Image (cartoon, rainbow, N blue to C red; front, side, top):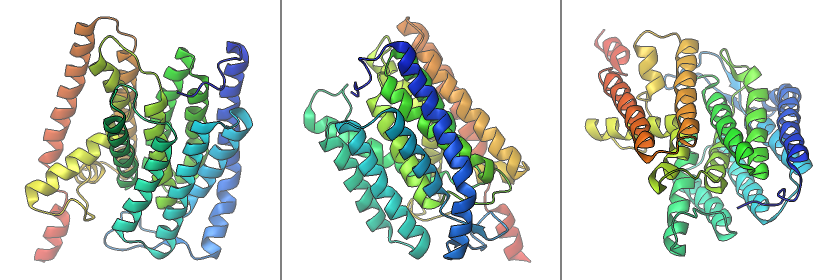
Length: 352
């Protein structure tokens, strides 16, 4: 658990948190246009193809602006200790991997190896799930969680603004809960990530002028996963305590589970790309892309708010009722989306 701010009084610690947000949002907002020009100059541009949903060549490398804004905000407000150092090292590893992947392309096995190295770095330096007492089980679970959430945020990046917006919403709820509980450094990390994502979102919201690329989505997912581990999400039962970060990160988890289930149903490899994510299905249902993004933001906010409310409930029975309602609602949404054929338009074109 990060405790480097615990000696400060609440007022000054709160100022640090507010400063982390405004520093990050300002730097990301000011730096992104420069990164965009640089990306175009070195040829880091996402081309239009049949597999993409964007219709214009768009510069990549936006994740670099988010990373720099986050990094500087954390250094100026938190300083560094063992936990923060390990997080920054792991995030830097994934940023570098993402940049190489955006520029040259990279085999999935190499990307996975980099994710494992980043996860092991933070776990070895003490960032792991505390609810599991056994050291080895806690370490293994923490690595799986970090790699899973990292990839979930990476995979959800299919429409303009989606990953940046989802990251900002999830980070906001983690920051709010941490702030209320006195975990000031975790709150500062969360609001630094929230601010940097929002500053970048100004240029990434439909129609996007620049993309995060893997350079941004990999490190953003990694940060959300480690923040979820660092925070103190105590509630009436161990199950509900574990459910709080799961609910806050509910949409990217939902996206990943739906895609895996869909591909297993179709007999496809779960590792291949495709147009079978929820956002593809929303567009297939008739939503405009911007409206699909806003709908997903609304769902993400609803899940995050459910996680927030779960932390406020003292009755285990009431907490379980809330969990049941949320899970039932998401199951209904999954069932509805499963009825949509995401490849219907492509199949109809093939028959002509």
